[in-house]
Amino acid sequence: MLNVRYTLLMIGFILVSFGTVNTAVGQSKKLLFPEAPGIVSFTYRNLFAKDVPSTLDMIKGNGITDIEFSNLFGQKPEDLKRMLDERGLKCSSYGVNWETITTKTNEVAQTAKVLGAKFIRIANIPHAKGSFTLDNAKNAVSEFNRVGKILADNYELTFIYHNHGFEFEPYEDKTLYDYIVNNTNPKYVSFELDILWAFFPGQDPAKLLETYPSRYVALHLKDLKRGVAGNNSGGTDQNNDVVLGTGQINIPAVIKAARKAGVKHYYIEDESSASVEQVPQSIKYLNTLKK
Image (cartoon, rainbow, N blue to C red; front, side, top):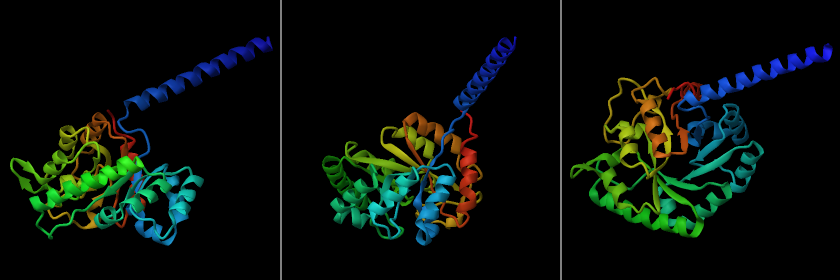
């Protein structure tokens, strides 16, 4: 009798557990962004400058494993890679500036390989402040194609360009950003869409993803404080970065368009002085979005 009762209790427990798992799986399928996002190191630049290991611990504590580094913070790439490995973290993208990537391409590539990154990212193009011209765009296209070919052919790395707002100057019936996208070789040049720096100069980030779905491999997720007016300057107060979903950008529309485009990397970049408090709130917001 005891054996029968025990067997019935176990069957009941298994059925309840199975039902709970199915419910959790079903709920997950209804969510637009159930996973943990990535993070850009610039978000915690001040903390990294003081203590790299403890900052990595904080990132891990937020459930994040995917990091885009814009700086090595005084660490040798081998040492930084070791610290990442010890915590189950990874560097998928390594960001440098224009001068470094165009004059030290091989050195940058070698550092990226040590870090385990697959993307090399830049976020600037030389131009006179307040005046981004067609010649600037043509120069960018030429250099992007040249550098991208070296990275792809010699190192199996992907060059990506991160927009910063100033590229959206009108050109013909589109913008100079469109000119850059349309004239770079997709085999060697991909893009990372910073959604704030698309929205700020008056563009629709979701529309850009829909227009160029095969060109984007990553996003910078950020939101712009309500009431802040944009322009093509490529600059705004860093504290205008707010918790995702509390600002002006239609985050669900952007995520849906990015999903459809096949984007795999979603890095939160919160440049504000409140990033430590805001990032967990942004993650919570992302994880509650419904399809």
